Image 1: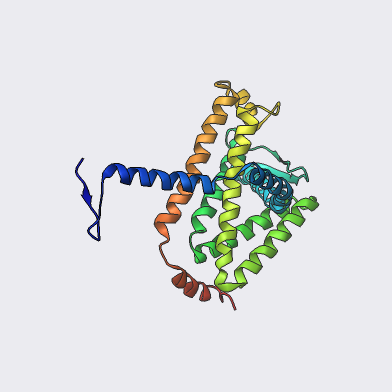
Image 2 (image 1 turned 90 degrees about the vertical axis):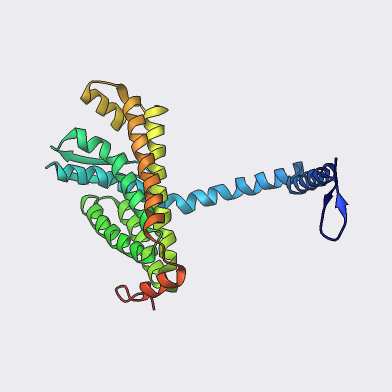
Length: 268
């Protein structure tokens, strides 16, 4: 095999170079691979902090439940239903009571509506001003939810906390944190919808669900079919939210900060 010239006048055949690269890769892998003691330490750290993470995201999970129930209610209003109440539960459950409407629209609206809202928030989360507009719309949704859930103390507490977070993120450092808050809520809403569809309809961990009621009402295909269909739509919404955000908002950080300062007074 002919030698290959390298800078400095030295030569190194290809076999030697391949051997050297292989040794470097193996050495890097051995250095970066945790040993049994380190794995135990990592596992211990994760197990100790997972409960803390669960507590941190708990209010956001309640918010996504609220968006799910609000979507049912909004679909009911659009189909001339009389919405009686929304109820949120501490165990992350919820229910919407209404009379009338079109069940073929109101039943899937919880999953698909919250997924669509989440996708819209994700798209807006790529831009500071768009995040502010999204928060104004969210504030209107909060008021609607409280109107229908005025007897639910969980709803009041959750929305009060979210409103406080929005105000703080809006006012601090050119509202940069607001983008990440909107993105986080959007991702949570989309993931909640996707996970809820899988849990309720495909894994069938509950006896009844919106999909089973929908299948009984339509009279064909079964709950798993409709669950898979709604899952596909939710995934498409999620992907579309990301792609729209990337395509629509190209301003850099400084430009977004400048615009944020001129939006409804901006940040101090």
